[in-house]
Length: 344
Ligand code: ATP
Ligand code: MG
Image (cartoon, rainbow, N blue to C red; front, side, top):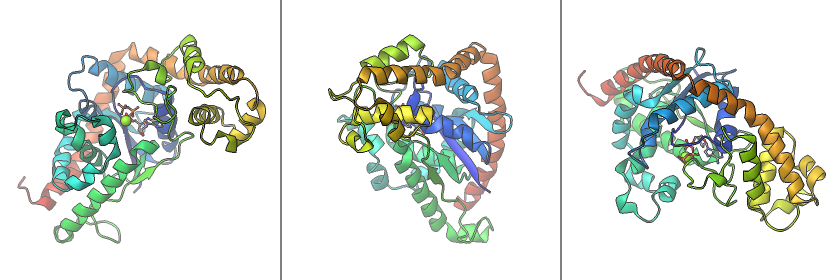
């Protein structure tokens, strides 16, 4: 039975990268799959523990899901901390995954920077919690941006090691599924959005992120038209005009990124875009890009603001989703306890 799980951290302003790389895909998958979409608040305290705005940010991510068109009745929308089984299974996975595996995670290296001794243990163990998020529902498909590929692969390795270490117990309890007879499936990363890696507007070699201190590095879903215009106007570019052919974008990460954003928002190919805007002034292209972004994001941002103004509705959605998610997670966690050999 295919099942989709994915999440977004309530760590700040949702941006164009989250939208194109994740949310647009979440919406599309609803047509064909059973989906669970989670506001992963436990992950949000790994980099910074004290967050006075956490509740507001949880509601904002939820509002973005709903504004983009996720249906919380047909599918499940909730915040992670309500369902205790995520943290419970993460502990078991802390004992399954190896230090060496986590040491290779590039996100940890990026986020920890040079001061490794002073980041939280949670930041290091983050990928095990993410494996638990996915596998506590035995989800099979995980739509994510390119930056999360390595973490989903770690979830696959963790599932495989658990299945292998407990193979006899799983068989004896009759809890294996499929030909291989494992308990956990191998979750597949789906990295397919119109733009799987949107880059920062200030630095074409860094991905656009919520946690980037510069607001000019990203287009937020709730930015108004003037702000979007100003951010694209100030977006870093090189001094050359746009090329007329796609191969001319090689080695020009900022130009490549802006053309990619235009392509993703419009559905046009980069070839067609460069046929229209190549060799012309960058300013003309940036103006067209601004108009397009305002046109596509404006309604989503407006609906988000409308929803956030009514926290009671959002809170009710999360409560209902949490209850439905708990029922599923509890069943899987009971089986995990039997497999590991805990008394319950
Ligand atoms: P943070 O900086 O706090 O890690 P983030 O912007 O990376 O924030 P996440 O909540 O970590 O956002 O990721 C949510 C989803 O958005 C993930 O599926 C992730 O792969 C995707 N995503 C994040 N940034 C981008 C981007 N620049 N381009 C495409 N997808 C992205
Ligand atoms: Mg991230």
